Image (tube, rainbow, N blue to C red):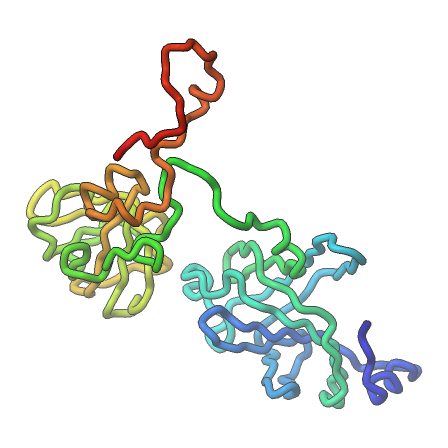
Length: 296
């Protein structure tokens, strides 16, 4: 139950009010941004809430219990607030959002209405639209592990333990040519087998895309140069000569874990688990199923 500050309550009880909404966004990289639908910047809660962001919110519905509620917020791109490249880079995915009601004539009179998370973000022209989800949506997320033939670890994490940044599984290169926003040609990757970086990661280390990470869909080497296809188009094109670091990919299979990474002891899947064909088959009396290990 929320307690409305006495000063704000007095204002609400008056004949006319001067209220507006404000949002404080905390991105996963720690950056904190403030926005308001008011026509002037507001300063409260140790945050500056910008008015030039063009923010506007839809109606907000509240519900008791654990039902997931959602609303939307729209805004225009601004160099001082949110830009398209930041959204495409995923900097706002899962960001925490605090919603405030504030008296714009006296910003010290405010109350936090809700705590939300940014869900789906859509882009259109020079504007964006973001879904705001209540925190109860986390209860819908799968928890724990799923038994699968393939590994469920992230390549290079604490469960996988592969040194993905070593010279055996990563390399540096430069942009040699640009075919499209999702297809690039790299120089400096001689000697790497075709497909070695398929499913991997490419990180820009210079230029206007510096620090941007992109997932690799395919890796081919038709000649002395290397062609890389990105899963999603880049938000903006790099320049010829920009440096990148590229990391090996893993298809999560037991065979790849052994042959490519020599890491079978840390494989986080269940490659010998019987499949659905076995589960639905009839007992024929010819197979031996005594619970013993399939491999010694």
